[in-house]
Amino acid sequence: MWRNYYFVRLLGVLMGILSKVLNFIAKPFADIVGGWQGRKTAAAQTVNELALLEGDLKKAHVMAEIRRIENQDNADADYDQKVLDNRKYTIMDDLLIIFWLVIFICHFLPDYAPIMAAGWLAIGKAPWWFQFGMLGILVSTLGLMRLFRMYTENKMSFGGQK
Image (cartoon, rainbow, N blue to C red; front, side, top):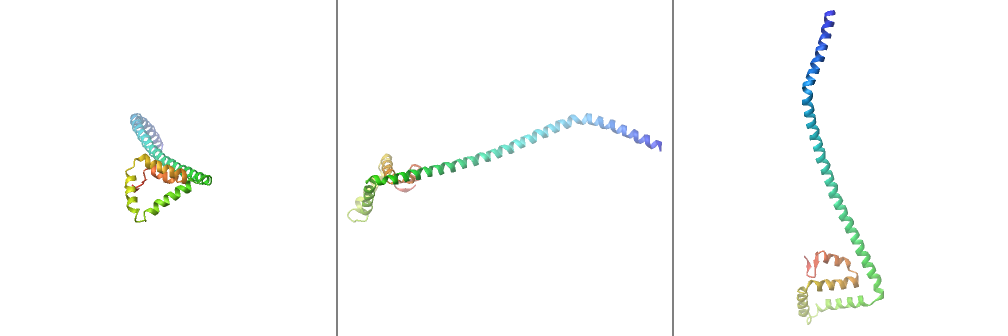
């Protein structure tokens, strides 16, 4: 019985020594592998964080564009409302509407139809500043800021959709 006790005790001491020797030999390798694994984990976390930040940046760009368009639409509507409010102080808007109605009606009068067609061909060859000026007159007199915005963003021309 005492033999078993000393044997177990000796075995425990030998295991402790063996453990310290193996730890002494394996610890540098474990540190190297652990450091490499830590750097690999840190790099993966950095890539993940950058991907998340890139997604946030794209979202911020979209939200900023939405706010810009909303603000622009509100400003256009406010401008148009001011123009419409000012119409009661002048007859220029009435004269301009009559002028446009005469042009519209002339398209359906047989004597004037060829003249109207030739006029549209001529206005199609007009310089950009003339078209821009005509549109400016309509915008400032009739409150057509949205039409002006479509024209300046090159979504529309006097020839129709581009």
